[in-house]
Amino acid sequence: MSNSKLYDAMLALRDDRQAQTLSRFFKTGKGEYGEGDRFLGIKVPVTRGVVKELWRSTTRDELLECLTSPWHELRLAALLTLIEQYRHSRDEEYRSGCIELYLDAAHGRLPSPNPRLSYVDNWDLVDLSCYCLLGDWLLTRDRGMLGDMAGEGNNLWVRRIGMVSTMAFLRHGELDDTYTIADIFLLPQGDGQPLHDLLQKATGWLLREAGKRDTPRLTEWLQDRAPHGNMPRAAAMPRTMLRYAIERLPETTRKNIMTL
Image (cartoon, rainbow, N blue to C red; front, side, top):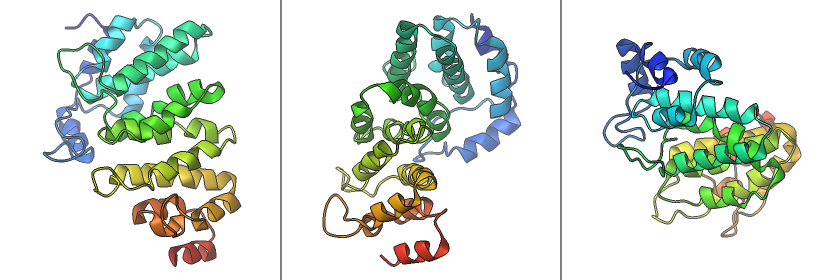
């Protein structure tokens, strides 16, 4: 038993059969992006239900216990709880503390007997948390840290946070940051390897979302010269990223861009 009601409530919902399915889905095998992650077998809607009941009473120490847990769903529950506490507070100092906690979790800086490179360490944990917390926080602040995060070559999840956080800006009609960070992912990778598939998909997804709000701008951006070399961005872009980005464009436009 734990001292955390959130921890105990989640652990009571364990489903080992479902855990096996989730472990395969989130690529936890040797050499895969989720290697070593452990699952309780709890689906996201169920986790949200637990959080809805307990977020108000969950203390910071209880939150830390879940956030640094080896169990994937406990880390998700902690992140969803942090979002609720952040959203419902009007105290700027408290909200700032929520963001500091989130950034420490993303960079693996939290005190724990199980140190990790990151506690926000799979695409679902990133995508369900970053723009609700960091993106929202930066709506009225300098956003330079997102470019720095996107450039952190050794941390896949921090890099993805840098991009996906811009969803908060897109939802307010602000497109510039998404394009700026997308250009970072078009630069040659420091290790000489192709851009990770999960970064290609995230960047293409956010570009597609930007295109929903201003289709001519996305089309022009793809046809303009890439930040290095003399080729259009569409030609410099990894194929997966490009296909995600142009998915919602008119068919004729998609075909023209693919020819680049």
